[in-house]
Length: 106
DNA sequence: CAAGGGGCTGTCA
DNA sequence: TTGACAGCCCCTT
Image (cartoon, rainbow, N blue to C red):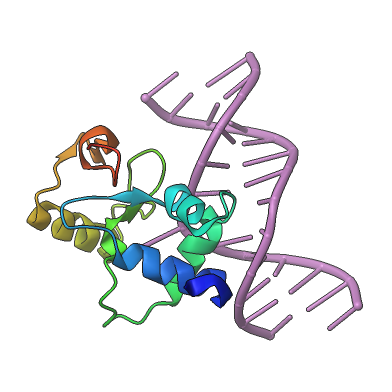
């Protein structure tokens, strides 16, 4: 139904569909959106989100299972904190996509 | 209209 | 495992 939606709109929708305790990579979201190369756009889009957004942006990480923010960044700790609160476990500073990856651990 | 940047990805060494 | 290079596309000046 979102056939006429912009890629950005799709990204928002897809991210909103990420279940709790699960994480998805930018590339994966972009792929689901229909464009495997729009990974960067996903990041750009999230960046454009308001701070009071209800989108689970914290469930979006890079393909390495790591957060794309520097640890000194408040966003990093916030994201990590939220993920841990949902049951996601960080091992050596990264997440096991095998267990917490969206539609990847089922 | 042209140029630059971006929370990236995948491959090679 | 990490580091470096190139490729991809959209959005904002």
